[in-house]
Image 1 (cartoon, rainbow, N blue to C red):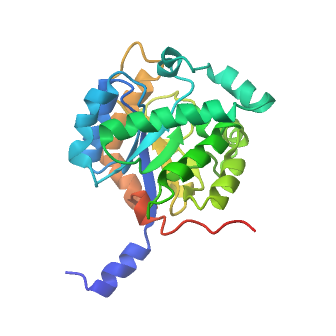
Image 2 (image 1 turned 45 degrees about the vertical axis):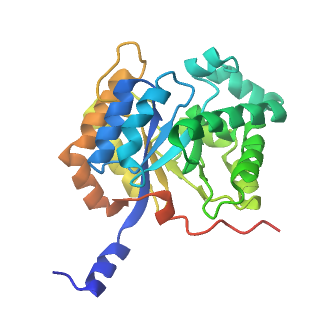
Length: 287
């Protein structure tokens, strides 16, 4: 048996990464895949699409994981669920609005409050964190409304929900565009509001290729990430032919459940952690 000193030295050589499975409740196959990965300790967080009609039912699948993984709100403006709810836009239209004049702050805050209500009603707790479907949480107008609502709703809590910032040190075009849609601006206003945030996001790709390509990408992401970063994934237990990402989702699930992923974590000296393991305190205000 290792001594406590040796155990501490080994732990200090590891970097803690939050591996977040997006789109819980997108459909039940996605929900089941995420739960299975969590049960095998292959992810440490999941983001919930509360506008989905299966959320009130699939939330029961998460109950056995309460306290073991982070469960957060996947703020949504651009999915079919958001369109059905009456406020949705295509991603292109949402990006143009954000760049042209920004979303109306009051309207955005009302929609954010609605989605937080839907989360709390069925989970019976505040979200551990907030991110956005297609990264809308950092769009102009939405990001300001989000920080205002989080401060109003959770400012009294000793541990407040943390935020995901969609940027990294990689240089591919898709990652660059996503970051330019407001990651730095969200970082600034969240800092002033004393909200914790993960400062880098990995896992961005075009969802093409086979499992071998995903394994190669994962090796790169694990090597490039730093302690406290988030790595997102989009797994599903089975491919849905009506889902444009169905094949990629099932390939991600197969890889994450397999032994090759465990070996990749070990090789990269990565330990999967929750936000509370890496966000000790909120940053002080900018002066």
